[in-house]
Image (cartoon, rainbow, N blue to C red):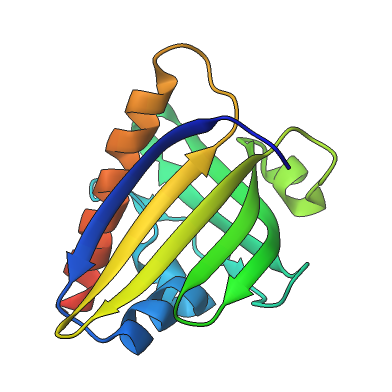
Length: 155
């Protein structure tokens, strides 16, 4: 999958690499934090079958605009405590999300991890095609996701 780079965000968290890895790979933990700070997850929409070809999915409730954003894909590369790559498909239809059509256009997400002693560093990068200006919005949104992760890790 050769797609153009869109953006990346990175952040260090005051937790072990094992802790940050679990937060990214355990479905119940992902569901607890994988959303912008002002929104919430769609309960029951999150999956993380952490094997090559395994399903990754989540949903974000957007009540101000009366829809849910659903994301799903397949894991393409996994190196424990170092790297996760997976495709990402998008829909606002619960019916389409239930079917999970992997032939629709997708993006590639690359999440890199580094153990930095007392901190774990994460870099999230997205590749694909977006309309003009939307990469900046997506980057701002992902910064909010990382803030949700920081809040989750402190509770």
